Each structure stands twice: as C-alpha cells, then as structure tokens.
Length: 101
Image (cartoon, rainbow, N blue to C red; front, side, top):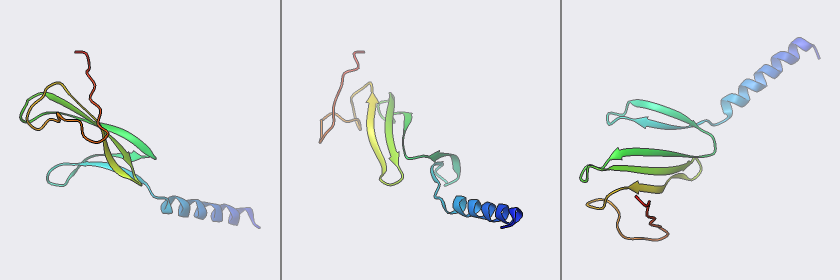
C-alpha cells in the first residue's frame, strides 16, 4: 500500500476514534443556566463545595465523589456548629468524628 494512503487512513481512523470516545464533564452553572466552569472527568474523582450556611452563618464543607457511571455521591460534610439544617443524628452508615477543635 502506498505510504501516503496509509497516512491518510491512519489519520481518518484516529479522528473517528477520538470523535466516538465519550468525554465526561462536571459543569458548574449559575441559576440562569449559564456555564461558570467545567472540568473533564476521568473515571472516579472527588470535588468539594465550601459555603456559608444560610441560617447558622458558619462555614460548611461538603465532599462529593463523582463517577460518570454511578453519578454523584455525598461522601463527607464538615461543619463547626449544630443548628437548623445541619445533621445531628447518625443515620445509616454515617459516622460522626470530633475534630478536636
């Protein structure tokens, strides 16, 4: 086979493979739906959301595990206060740990 034709066929095959391979993203959107940021996912990854609780006015950190086959799962919630809207009873496989602070 002509080397020039082989190069063309190889290039076409590579292009087909890349266009057919799924690429998964985690997208952060604003309330109006516009994209704020996006991240490429490769397998299973974790991300965290840090915010100030609307009632207690204290910081909260939530750690999530994302897997494009299984979805998003809340893995951990870290907070420094107890009150309205914050968990206080152990349910299921939940574990409470004291941070010593």
